[in-house]
Image (tube, rainbow, N blue to C red; front, side, top):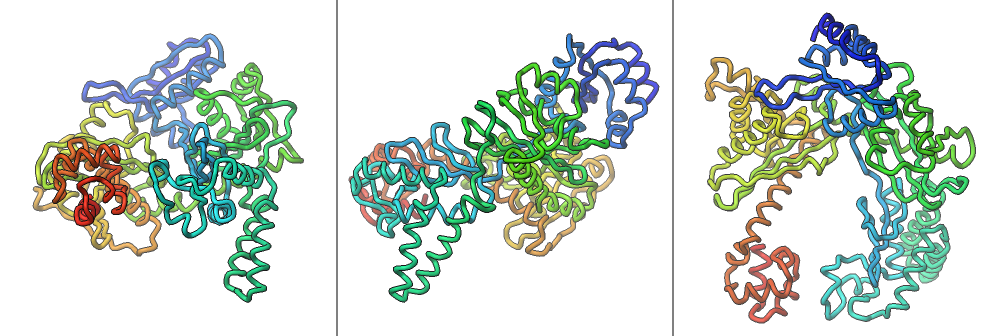
Length: 605
């Protein structure tokens, strides 16, 4: 759309509140793609302002737009919430979009009869959770010291069930083996209570035993052991008072839920850190990245974009503690109407919490930002690479052929955007890769894929796989950069031309040219490519194995395992996956499975 067309369309719009969408027409006849969503107090005035955009980014958006759609609302607050929902639904390329990055670990005590202690980023719903913690190494040291002192189990439910003798954890002294009755439930519950007291702030529960062990080792002239206890003691004593401690909740006036938000802007990216307190204890932490808004009050604009998008599908807290007030009157009115107390503390305990959130937000502007910029520069692309999709194929001599399509955003896996596909059974890696990429490309071109287009495609393999992927892109007209990364020498292979431009030109497949990049082992952009490649490989192999397991082919191919033995194994372990996890000793307890057969099962699976 040009300036004249924008003014012409704006003249026909009402002067009421509402939401507007700039759309790009789908040439294939599918649904138009949403480029930008905005809210307005006065739709006519707001849309007219796009005839002379204030930034180059918005100017490019308007130039790409083919159409405009509006929705009138009764109130400005309705426009605010509708805008947030549309942004989350359509993920428009030119909006400030919210992306989660849960990057700090928690410690959980599970709700089992004999609770398990573990470090996690995705706690169970019914677990008792402590954290977040900013120093993962210190948390690991403390949890290990707690297990050595109080013997809480750390094993999975599968390993815990059905044991008739303790595992190695018991032998090395980090578990009291409740699985085999080496400790009774009341005694184990007492140890769990001590661990809870430590995480609730009673440092001496762990520090005192460590100090006694350190002194005893020093008296026995076991100086290396004493030094180990000293190092652990230092970590434990710093746990509730230094950079790795669990933060404590604000002392609000009867508020049951408080969120603390800190934001920072670096270049064209913003990061928001959220700490969440419930019933007086901080129980959750998240970090989110957004495209940085333009203008003078950028931090206020970040909050104005983040808050409605984040809370449109979540319960609002009783209070929000912010480093700056959002510069949005409609947002302020909505929060006030919902009974949310918005505070910008200047001093005291609440201000310290906001400072901690700011510290966490600044940590978000990390090496991964450098990775995306470095990769774009190394490949000769503009800006930074934010969204990468990785592809791999897995099969067994042409059987159970599957493909994976994983997504990384800002260097982190975006698992909600992972996809997988069964492919035609053929023992041709190039044909399989071409089929997989063509499937993704067709869905993108036809508007049937709900994910935004990536900045880069990465295929697992070399020139052959890259050529197959480029064939698929050329056939469908999906113009997205694509590279390959082979495992053998970790060399990145890139084409010298766009596959779509080659398809429209005169070059034959044999005349295509490639470049091979031998990047340094410690190059951040190589590390990003490796993570994407390895995750695509893992996801493909996992899916392939699950398909094989569905028909028990994995067990059928093991020498010495006949139909009856297979049935006994599945009755004993429940699934082929559990058979794969079982030890040789556990396998030999099944009737008909001797040591040789057990060794064969372990080797094949």
